[in-house]
Image (cartoon, rainbow, N blue to C red):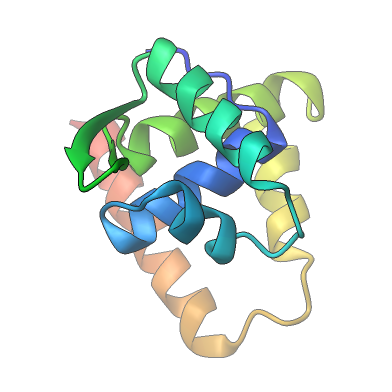
Length: 124
């Protein structure tokens, strides 16, 4: 499934994934940038038209729920990043991530474990 979310759409989806659901006002409050209510409403309607969210009537307004799973959006975003920035090279992508000096030893050990597990799977 190829998912293309704009930066703003991703901001809104992030709020929905974190909260499980949100009204327009709640989504607006959950976004770091100061966006107008009609802007957030338009984004939610666009996301609904794309099939990424659904809504239910709540009082006089609507409550929006994510339909799109964060894993699906993340996987699509990683593939786009891999293709557009790293020209398909997973090695360059991983090297770029590992060059971040803020990664502590525990996280590096967890990453090593994941790589070792994947190597074992590839040998089967």
